[in-house]
Image 1 (cartoon, rainbow, N blue to C red):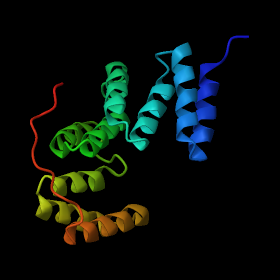
Image 2: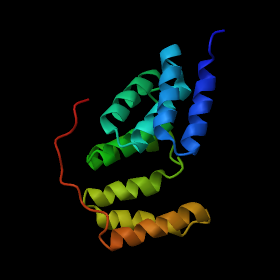
Image 3: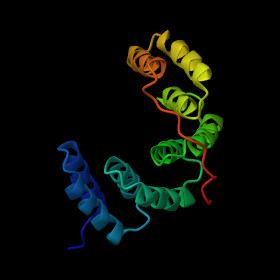
Length: 168
């Protein structure tokens, strides 16, 4: 029988939930071998590569996924996070602006944006955003914003020196 690539993604998710990232990635790669355009597999691949700190590979997978879904706010958010983790918070901020234009209420976006603002030295703006989010009724985001605000105020989120923009 022909394997069903989507089932591979489900097995990968189960492995990821058990924190078996290498195994999970193998299942995702099997799914992509069967169906290179399988969106769920590509999204899972990006997430796993990011979690494994394999950032250049995560960026390449993101570009493939964005070629198919260029206005996917979730993928663009992931791209911004990968750019920030790769030491390019200014690029991440630019990408988050695209997410804001597509979906202004995207979950977690404001907090991630504040972290990147702090990394590029815009600490006062970051603190203002975090204070605002921490006052909202959404307790999960408010609590996370309050924790991040303390990190920013304590100087634990380091400023990343500007780099030349990455080739696009």
